[in-house]
Length: 376
Image (cartoon, rainbow, N blue to C red; front, side):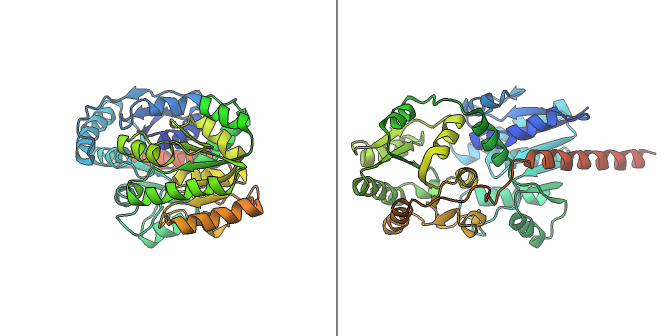
């Protein structure tokens, strides 16, 4: 059995890696090992649990400043140690986090092939999103296998003269559809209260660093006006755990009727909200990918997005953080009760994990054959 290490350190990484881990577990010659890098403590376990998964290893990081340099300096030797001890046939990293970059570099230095899940997303601007755009471009330089979620992502990789590119779809669609099929009841008490209140549900999430401060104030002001203009809507806003952001959101919306501020939602609760929402306002990449599967329109609270496929397909509108643009777009969606056609999700069909595992198996088989030939 060839072991494939899956490095995850944040909730989105765990959610997108979970379908791959499940598919690898059913493969005759490959086996998964999930390694929690420790980037976000506890959140990985919570994200994996609904899929019946748990980390095989958990790295314990000591963090004091919370800075990027401190995080990376802790991740790199810790993940290198795991690779050295387990001798995997390949290392899979997801997306654009510090865990992805550190894991890819540690594997590359050890001569272990790097598999990049969700490869090829680009804005072309290293400052937006920051530091994610730089992270994913750096991973691309050393990855042996690029698993592109869409044809556009694959085209971006081809334009950079890279090889080993396979279009798989995005595994987050697999995760969302699987979770939706379970139809679990709401766990979050605030969500249960909002559901009992009736009316139309609007989900708002904003967590990008570039949105903190004045841009977020503009978004929150638009939300307050939207609630005032539409007495039939209830807003649910999971608040980012950063204390400064939490204070900013509470100050702007804490006393606004029909706005519920809550803790971050467990993944089954998030999917439950997406299935029932009339509108989503978000700067989250994952939600842009998940929402089209449930027909809910998305207003993207960013100036640029690396997921233009959703905009091109009519599933999302890029409105930035300008208060007027947000209100104009939201007013149209709510007034006309717009919905996105089902089965039009440009990011996948729920079978991405199967394609991912097939590509990894081909990589491992080819590498083994080359090694055998060299040895003989």
